[in-house]
Length: 394
Image (cartoon, rainbow, N blue to C red):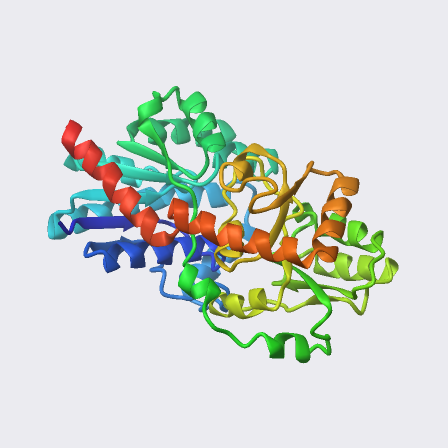
């Protein structure tokens, strides 16, 4: 049976959030459901692209950069009036079976609409945003944001957390019973990530030999991503194979990482691609022998982990609970203790010197994706199953 679904979000970023939003909507539609998107800016722009300079985006950027501290939070709160009106109008026109909302800080419009029209609300939560932004010093009205977050979590019919670690945090923060919080990890599109691509030109255009060992990482690089640790660990390894590092993306840490690469004698071996569209990511992944996640937030479900696995890449990742919900150490990934350069270096040495290990880890990673259906289509099915479970229990 096809369902009518309102997909509500407030996200304008063209990063992994946009990948997730578009992929879930597409998967639901492909499975025969009617999805109506409710958002300040519909998610029509591709992830990794250049944002269209709309007046709304320019106003928000100006407020975020120039307005007094707290002004952006007030804008977030005022959005609820607009968001609720849009949801109410769509509910009257479409008569949806349920609302699916990607949680955003200070956003209660979905909870209002759910309560007013008695429609189930499935709330996707990717992080404890109030505490996260408070820790970064980005909130003026922290207590209010925290109170609203608890309110939305309690009003949601079901909360869909992206990891068991996060689910536990949300249950504790809002005193939720176990059955109210369901874990739905991130996913990937195996066909997109592992399909036929031109692997030669990525290396050739940089003058890299086929025998060179290419380590890679994809993302918007900030200081806390730990790429500096990767470079330091790599510089300490001496092998007969030439080592290259392909960093796909850009970010505020780029200049400092380029300086560090020069100081470590890796200047000619470390390459930043700059910002690229998400659709070109498989081409770069195909050129990598192995991928590294030097550091990960302890409650997150890194989108790139699933894309690396779907692409059949040998993965090196921190040994922490949220990642071990997905990968199995020494089966489909090599792990190291977080912040331990010695262990990271040891894992790097193993993967560089053992081609058969590299191949086996990548193959097992793809099998894990297939076996556990860690795909966008799998996630769409799980979302519908959650709603159907709610419908059966009333």
